[in-house]
Image (tube, rainbow, N blue to C red; front, side, top):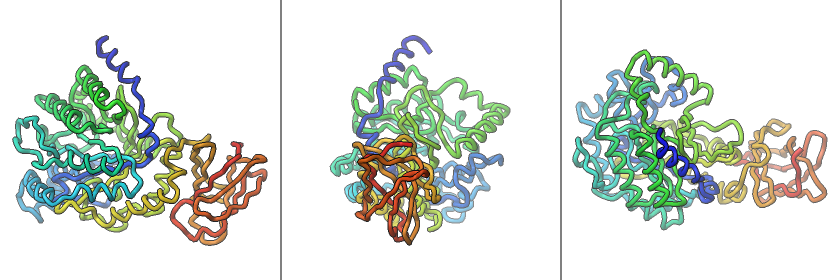
Length: 485
C-alpha cells in the first residue's frame, strides 16, 4: 500500500457510525430478485451447519433461495432437481421477465407502511444481488446482458416511500459476486475468493455504486462478500460516499481485491482455505465476516456475539433459513415469536442493531403472511417496550441468567437500567438479579404497568414480578437508583 493510499485510509477511519444508526436498533432488509420467482431452496440445514461441513460441495445445498442460480450449477442439488421438474430447461435469466411483471403491480408505499409499523429506523434494499440483476434503470452498460435491469425504478421509488414514512433508506450491492460476469460455481467458502469477477467487472461495479450514491444518496451503503477492485480505487469511492452522505454508514464486507485471492485457483490452497474457514465458523458459531481495513460496523450473519462489543455491529438474519422468498419453507422453519423478540433484546444489550429480513414473493411483490406476522410481533413489542431498547447503551454487563434460571439482559439510558427477563412463566415470577444492588433511592417499575416488589439480599436484587401470563415477550423492568455489584 503506497503512502497516498495509506493517507486515504487514515482519512476514512476518522468517520464513525452516527447516532441515528447506533440508536435505531432495528432495521429491515429486503431481498427481491429474479430468484424470488422460483422461490425455492432446501430447508433441512441452515447455513451455519453447511459452513462447518467437510463434505465436498456444501454450498450446493444452500438454504438461501437467492442463491438459486448458483445451486442450479450443481446437477445433483435439490435446486437442480426442482428446476428440471418444474421449469425443464428454462434459463434462469427468464425469471427476470416474471419479476418485471410483478414490479408493474408493486406498491412501494404499502411496503414502507408495514416497515414503519415495526418501529424500524432504517430499510436496506437489495439493489443488485449475486445474479447481477439491477433493480433500478442503470445507465452503466452491461457488457454481457444489455438489459439486465428493471425498467421501473424500484430503488428510487422505495427510497421515496421509506423516507416519507420517516425512516432512513440504504442500498445493498453484491460487489463480490456477479454471476452475469463470472459463473464459477461456489461450492465451499474456499471458492469465494476465486469467484470474485475480474476483467471489466471492477470498473462496472464501481460505476454502479457511484450511480447509486449520486442518484439515491443512501444512508447505508451495504456491500456483500468482498470488493472486486483494489484499495487504491476503493478508498476514493468510499470517500466520495462520505462527501455525498456525511452521516451515512458502510458495513464490513468491503475487503478489497488482492492478488492473494487468485491463489485459491490452486486446489491445494483451496483445501487449506476451506479447513481454516471451517475452524473459524465453528469458533464464531456461524458466519462472521473478516475485518477489512475500513468499515463503520460489523455484520455477523444469523449469529450474535457472546458479549458487549465496543465496535458498532448489526446482526443480520432472515425470518426462516433464507433471505429471498422460499415457498418451500414450512411453519417450523420460521423463527418463533419468543426467539425473535429475545434476539432483538440480546443484540441491543450487547451494543448492536438487528437487521431482520423480508423476502417478498416474485409473483406479485406481496410479503408472505408468516413474515408479516413477525413484523407485527416486532411492532407490538417496540410499541410497549421501545423506550428500553431504542437509544440505549449496554450496561456494565450484557446480562446472564437470573438466580432462578431465566435468561436476563440489561440496557441503559437516561439514568435508568432496564432489566429484560425472559420468564415464560404463567404463575407468580421471581427474578433475582445477581449483578444489582439497591440504594436508598431504588425504584422498580414494570413497563407493562404491572407492580414490582423488591428486596435486596446477599444473592442480589430480588424482583417479585407477579403473574406474567406466559407471555413470549420479555418482561421489562425499569430500575432507578441501583448500583452494579
